[in-house]
Length: 128
Image (cartoon, rainbow, N blue to C red):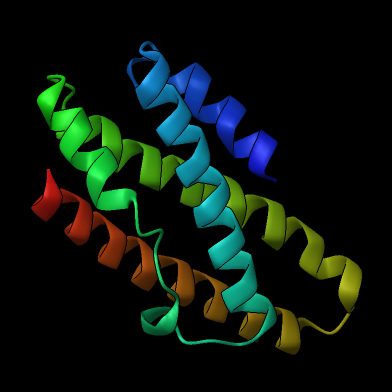
């Protein structure tokens, strides 16, 4: 999943990859966000208790210092969220043929992802 998200971001937001240090930070944060999200889902942790990567603020500041638009960072968050949700939601019907638990799991995944995304976006913009 990390590779899939990173490839999507490389294709869609090249300005996050055109400088080696920013590219490295972006790749590291992608991995950390995916791992944090999946850990939260696996252990049924509320989104407000899922810690975003500690170095996220530094990456946001570095993007600002290099003249990258804040919209690139926010778009990366949204694209990553969409890729992760797509991958997870496509697997749900394989787990059960009963629509009720699939619907409940879908709502829970979307709520967790949205709450996490809101928080990391706000934190990123403040650091930017």
